[in-house]
Length: 112
Length: 110
Image (cartoon, rainbow over the protein chains, first blue to last red):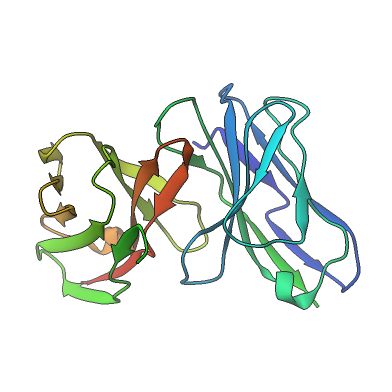
C-alpha cells in the first residue's frame, strides 16, 4: 500500500485553466520529487525539494511551479494549462542519502 | 552520452523463460543501483536495491552489478504473465536526484 498519495488520479481540463496537483506523503521523508512521463516513455524530472522551503528545477524545462511549506506536502501548480501539458505526473519521496524513491500512482492530466 | 543507458525493447518472451534486462552507466563513481517495476497506469515500485558488485537474489529475481564494465542486469527466472511491465534501472548521482534509464517494456506471453 502506497504511503504517498496523489490527487486527483485523473483530470481533464480546458486550456488556460489554473490547476494544482496534490502530493502528500506520511513517511516523514525530507526529499520529494515531481516527474513527468508520457505513455511508454521515460521519466523526466521537473522539480524536486530536499526539505521545507527548498525547491529546485529538474532536467526538463517546465512551466509549472512547486512549493514545500510542510514536509509532507509538495503540490505542483500550472498557472495556465495547455494541451502540451497533457501527460502523467508522478510524485515521489525518499529519506536523506541515497535511498530509493517511493512513488505515488500519478495524476493523468489531459488538457483539451 | 546519457548517464544511464537502457534498451527500451519491447521484449516479448514465453511464460517460464529466463529474462535478462540490462543497463550500462557512464560514471564509475556510481555505487548504488536500483531496479524499479512499473505496471501500466501505476507509479514505479522498487524491486531490487544493490550496492556492491556481484549478485543479489530475491525470489525469482537476481540483480547483478559489474562495476568493471559499468553494467547492471536484472534476471527473472520462470517468468510469469504478471511480470509483464516496464523495468527501469536507476542510480543515485551524488547529491542530485536518481538517474533513471528509459525503461524496458517486457511482455510475458502465457
